[in-house]
Length: 395
Image (cartoon, rainbow, N blue to C red; front, side):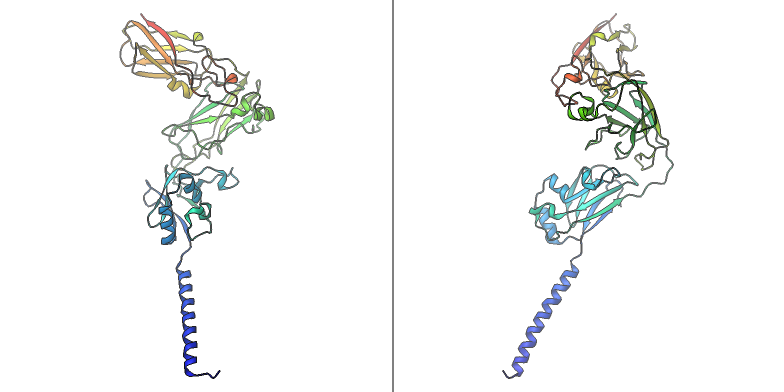
């Protein structure tokens, strides 16, 4: 075929179109930025974690997908970095909310701890119905710089506060002099025997850490699977505490407070381990010392054995007739005495102390029901019992 001017022009036009298409594709590929993870702490009261670099199509898909909370946390997972976890997936995701408005953002439900590291993983392929373009998972670690301030927070108390606990104890409470950070106690609490050896697997690992509202009291749950007889962990390992021996709870100094600063000092409290307590509570064994009328002296209830400190704080109320009395309750050292001081003077006549069925002793025994005969495998059985009334008379 002779090469004519027309053939040359057509060939050049085809090649020019192919080259232009190549350039457009190359420019488009270059302009599509890769997703990136960053922490925005410009407003310390409302920090957020952001995934940038997503295309408009990606963001539209996410905004219209109506993802469930589980799908959001699978797509963009934020968790506290822990030296005890093999990987980020072994820890529960942080609570928070997700927004899509120009970028994908995660807003934590609770403030982030200064100096604490957080694992972040963006994995679009974990939620296939979004059909977003970016399929490659990315991961990062974010943190807020630690505050340069001297440590002042200390452990102010531990409960049980006495020196003896039964070998089937279920709970302990650690109180702090100030608010603590988001970290739980698994990394910062240990138990050692009198030979200085760590007692393994004492504490039950939980997905949710048990704090009071102002984060000054932490609840330690001793693994009920090892405590309760004849269930698998108990049969395999036995109870972690043994009667006749000593055990020391150690709260390590590296536990950060709300400012990301470690505790001012390590804390230790030694217990002598006594025999297992497998007897139900009986209010008939309680001694009630009624106050005289015309005074604001306390009514005092003395128990034959220590009761659970946290539950004791909210399980007892005093009433006259059907009207609860306003006043202040206090728990005596050793948790075997409870007192109530009314806001007004006592009047002559009958009163009632109402006891909620959640009240337990150190081993989980409740009024009229021992822990060992509760629902097999349940540390806290369903609330089926009714409150119990303990009457007294002011003369």
